[in-house]
Image (cartoon, rainbow, N blue to C red; front, top):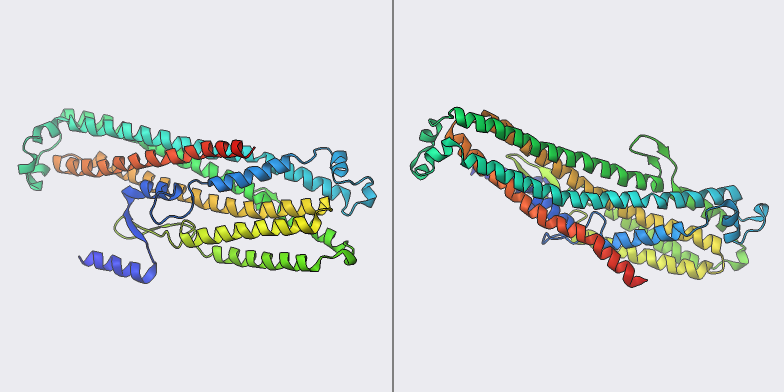
Length: 413
């Protein structure tokens, strides 16, 4: 009772948690968030949602449709003489080639995310099967058979006095090997998740500039595009300046920036470890909550409005319109990849907690030598294994997402 009051007091004074969960439920809670199955979640299912994937695919298709050769790039923009171009020809050719190269790397990102979804399904199924076998073997241990008929009548003290015999110890040694296999599977998934996180972060790094996962520094495509667009604006004929439309774009860009600032205040990780082996879960104040979803919706509406205004402003100026469109696309995609990275952070945290749990299970099992501790282990291990059933169910939603993407793209053709 005192412990409960302490926890409640801590919660009310430190954070506004939506829910308190036990560590065994971390997988269930994580996948419920990522698949939009939690009642408080408002973000669509997926590391990348269906809407995210459609937007990214549109940009990639547009970028890969740009010309490849230097001469074709100039010709495509109607530039006949390199010296007469509105921009230095070398800068224009370099940025178009870089945009194509960056877009071409999306396939690797998408493949890794697909593999993650399939791996979740396979791993959860394997752990459920292997964990079930462990429990079955334990139930066939001589020590369990010995107490099975009288378990309800035995006190904890009586159970503690019933110790392992040679056969029990041999089976326990074999079961430890199986538990280590489960730990190996989980560790492998944890490593894969880190690799996916790096892949997503690297793709975004080319947009924003900064360091890749291998510590290589890359320049920002977005910053370069903004610089080129400013050069084009400075060379415009003032008599043709559509001041109202430009002011409207500036106004909407400012609103977009304010929304970005507001969005940045949502918590990055929904999970917070508390005392006593429990976890505080924040949903409404995170990127999965309804407030964040409303901001994402408004941001997307603003980006669409800015694109439409830009089309009116530069419909006869292909170079300026293209540079601006790519800039807006990358700005939008930057936000999508930021959210995807945060979604993967939750998977990363999930694997870390699960790996810690299985390590503790192995340590506990290795020290068991009597019926009382073995019964306690069975109860705890059952809870861990049962949580993987929900992970198996939720992972199917992530796999179906890519099928929905294909259907959506076919319907739009």
